[in-house]
Length: 592
Image (cartoon, rainbow, N blue to C red):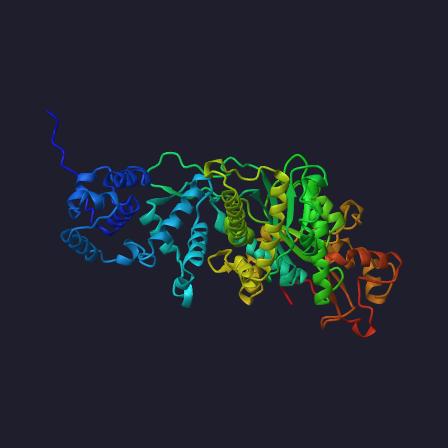
């Protein structure tokens, strides 16, 4: 004998259940059998399996055959009382009950539901944006007076209640594995904070010239992996699920909140693989760079060099002119430790062509914590592009429906060229929107934080940061050597330097050289050892800082070398005779 199983009891008068039942009965014109079939089909047969037409008939007033033919009916007084009691027991009626704004407008609700079902049948991913657009556009078309006064906000909570109540839909979500951090990620991040702080002070870099850049892949149809669909269904179909075509977007910003022009990289070897010129004419005026990536859409060495030459360098030059900074003003390029970025080819090319750009890397595995593009920009850009893409698909589907195409026969545009041209408009709109939201970009830098440190310019240049870095230099000589390499990165061939004399060894000076330095500061032969300080900088008397010397950064080496070759500049001592008694002080890099 089988064990007895307790029957499952369902409170059909609960607001969530009753609203669906009442709506199904009205839509089926009080045909109870049709109403039960409608409930089971619209909700996947999960929530109303134990509801039968005979149960519904017990809740209705007896009616004649004529009333039945005309589709008329009425609930009993006892049933309405039970429904009212069930509603009163629900403490959060607003969050769990039927959306009451359109309760007295069933035709509008029906139109909205039919349109959303058509979108779903056509495979369009149903997001809150699509539902909001459908609800508001339908109300504007059928009852615009409902929107007068601005009382109806069509909030996310209302959208969720509407979909659950009238369509029995729920959000279907995918999961992903968590990103793992290195075991010593906190130490690596702190070292990177101090490294950036040191470079800013050593090279006197303003916030406008601290740039972070990162590549991200974007689908031509970024439909996403979520959609509203009938609850309980096993297969959830969506438009563009198998669309794999992508392009790469290079996103770069400065610590002051400026957005650099995007670089859009498409698979192909010629300009024919890029959006049409008329599609991105506005983007060219904004500085956006379209690049043919070759066999893949991912950024390569050539694409990276093109971005540096045509986007990064142009931005640095414009900023230097605007801020009236020295011609060879240093800038910091802060990028992740991707293999192309750390390649010897790119490093040698940067040192040769753009020695005024100091490249530093995000610690490996820490991009989601210490890279502004990952923390606060890329996901915002992708969300923006996804929203405008869904509007593009919605417009396409509405045009097809108006032309009489059956929803199940509607397909997304297959022409890659047409989709590429559409993406050009999307990324141009995204760049304009970001440039109008300066604080959002700055917050992306500020949100890159670990304990008391963050990547905002105010934190990196604070007195506390300067003091911490100076202490760390004394405590960890290895770190000090890492951030202040003995060789000058501005010189293409270190072997070309005078290696006969060890510039860090005082014993390398002969008595004759020392006598010449003391007796004749302007002697043309006083070169070599007297040029360099212990921190690798060069001292000269022009624009002195109070002690008759100023510090020349490493990017002035070319200019100084040219002058020195002609015997016009003596780097070992001050030019002014009034400062002859001064001597350069070899202090720590943080001493003022």
